[in-house]
Length: 172
Image (cartoon, rainbow, N blue to C red; front, side, top):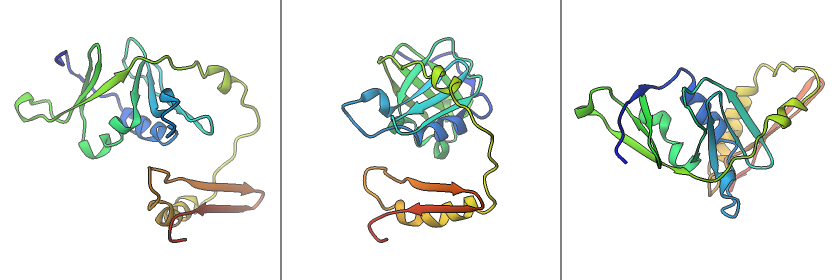
């Protein structure tokens, strides 16, 4: 099915996809955990350990499920427009068709669980993340970025007045 009716990508959509994608799983026996769920009002992903939902008006009329591995290069791609067809979600990096490069991502037809109840049950008080967290995470990422299979994850532990950020890899 050929792409048509291109639309501008909504602000923050690519950031939402890239952030949610970090919460997808790696277990091929749970195919839906490998996907990013694009809903008309948010983008989300869950691997049964972590969950992310980013509220963003996607302009979609229906939910779309796409494997993270197909979406993870959107930032480098520079997508500016997109369109949805029966089996594909298409992105292009130019509004001049003869100059455009199109990235087409196959849609998954699996059902995505409604995670709204999970969010409704969240309680507690808001916490301001400490200054220096981004710097500490960047340093730790040096170790975890060498891990095989996209397991580039950090552990952040926060207690009153203290922060510990851990990244593990083959070199340390």
